[in-house]
Structures are given as C-alpha cells and as structure tokens.
Image 1 (cartoon, rainbow, N blue to C red):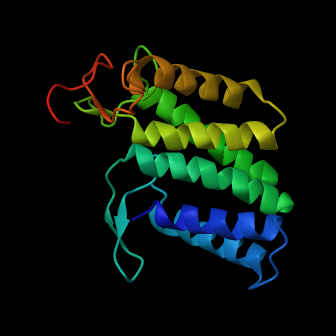
Image 2: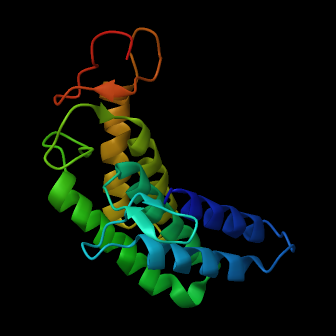
Length: 183
C-alpha cells in the first residue's frame, strides 16, 4: 500500500531529527521517497494505491489517505534533506492544489472519490491535518498550510467529534452528517 513508504520515511526522518545514529537515515528517507514517487506517482500528479512485491503498480485508484501521507512525508523530506526542501514543498503544494481542484467538498474537507460518493471519512482528514501542521512548522506558518489545518480542525470540532459523547465519528453522508446505524 502506498501509505507505507511515506510513513517509513517519516519515521527515519523523525529518528534522525532526535539524534538516532543507526542506519544512514537521510539516505533511507531519500531512497524510500524516491521509490515511492517512482512506483506510485501517477501522470495526474496523484498517487496510486497498491503495488506488487516487484514494485509494479497494480491499483492506481485514488485514496485520500494515501495523498495525505504523501503530503506529510514531504514535510519530513524537507527537514531531513534541506537540499530537497524546495522540490518537496513544490510537490506538496501541487498535490494539495490537485486535491482542492478535484476533491474539495463544498463545505469543508475533501471527498473520498470522483465523482463524490458516500461515505465521507474523518480518518484521512486526521492525516491531512497532521500534514498541514507539519508543513506549517516547516514553512514558519505559511497561510496555505495554516488555512488547511484550520479548515480541518473546524471540521473536526463541528462534525467529526460527537458533542454529546466526545467520541470521534468516522463515516458521514455528503452533508457531513453522521451515517445512521452502527457505522
């Protein structure tokens, strides 16, 4: 699954940032994200979903979760590999632009598919929120990332978190209302 490599690259970058001196962590970050782009990056600028054990893309379908991790890993790349910071930032901004253009929900957040369909989900938004905060830290508060974090934070406070129980809901209809039933 394409979300794995960005997570692993982030882990190496975070370990290196905290002083870990195990394997050459910067090389691991660079290699992992280079492989991720080589295998999963589609002509559309989005990332596919699944590759086989030979590194051949077998499922190019869209998953918002995977795009969120790609953006998040870009912030880690920017910090871990300063020589790649500008390219990482440009790539993250391009990916966010594609999401806004093709998957933006009319109220807030993003759809899970094109054309839009139920359910809308909170989980990939949590990771987009994390990615926006990471980029906000790396870019010293760039309004692009601050606004995304604020948008998703507002969505969490007004839709994702049940005001009565405090529980975090996962699945929603097209108006960001919780789906009926156990889901």
